[in-house]
Image (tube, rainbow, N blue to C red):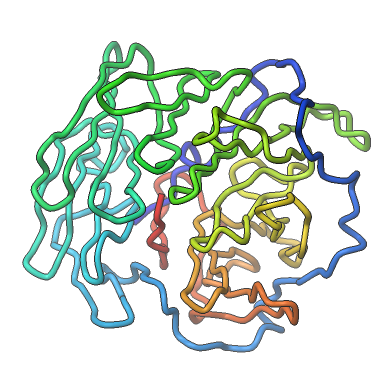
Length: 358
């Protein structure tokens, strides 16, 4: 299991679009100093309970109910749960990301769902369907299949490399070049007006976060992305927008968004926000303590049944999974032991990997 910067650096300054203003609730000017702040320092955080959401460690997928060995020879770079002890994963067959295949891992073994070259994938809210993109260098397709059988239900050709941002009910949000798109299986692909990238989806409620423009950071002059949350079920109506953070993950209950500070590194940020998913209001600022070494998170995020958000952290030459409460009382703790590991770089092994519902 390895880190790939490409997976987490999808938002880049690819141009400018007309700002979306009509009907949009815009987040306040930077008020980060006025909201509760959690500082992640491995030397100060208490050791908490074991994770109650799946994770991969030492070639074993750990779940609350059982441990699931990963077959010999598999190089898992991303995985998502589709059942209590069943997962869909990307297997890098060459070690350089050029020939990924899609597999289903369960107690009975590993089943190939799609041959290389699989690019990215997403799983439906009920775990019954999986969508993925393929790109050969000059042609490709986006595919929807049944998780249990691997039977292809729909496919549509694409003329440029694309990645899956996630499901929105029975549709799939894609990012292709400098466009965010919505694929309706059986009907085709449509561009999201004025959207240059897609960063997160809420599969059950049909919400998606898209980058709509770039603005100048008043402190540094750098170009930073501005995101808008849209409702794809309601003709892409705009819910709220912000230039202070980029949504990374919606909580399963629809209450929260985990987001990265737009002033931080695009792929490996060290400042994150817990945000109200309905209003865009920042609820908590989470900062990784700087100790003179590299500090970051890869943006792999999961949500525990009790409501906490868990994510990976690198600091002081070590990595751990950290749990932060979404409750009013706040508080963060270690969900795993810290393990020696330098800042994530492409193709470097990871001691821990969270299973995410893409």
